[in-house]
Structures are given as C-alpha cells and as structure tokens.
Image (tube, rainbow, N blue to C red; front, top):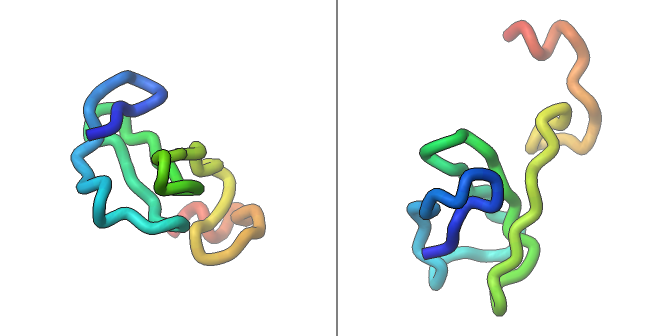
Length: 65
C-alpha cells in the first residue's frame, strides 16, 4: 500500500484496482489525491478550491451547501 505524501500514513487502497483519474483520500489527515499514473503509482494532491466534477473554482454559495 502507498503512503500519504502529507502525513506518511498508509493509504487504504488496492493499487491493482486504481485507474488514472481516480481520487483517493487519506483516512488520517483527510488529504485527497488524484491518480495521475498507475505504473509506477503517481499521486497529485487535489486542490481544495476546486470541485471534482467541474474544473472551476467554487463560489461562496456552493461552499455553504
């Protein structure tokens, strides 16, 4: 299992089942990472100001929901 780049905790994911574009979250610190490569496994931190469904910043009304 891979480690969280933020807190070094083990990420509870099955590496063999991951695909590019999947998002995994750390159970310890809550950081979210997008899978950008699978062989070898490469993760990039998901920006907190962005919605996973749209690549646009959230406005204040959406954040309150």
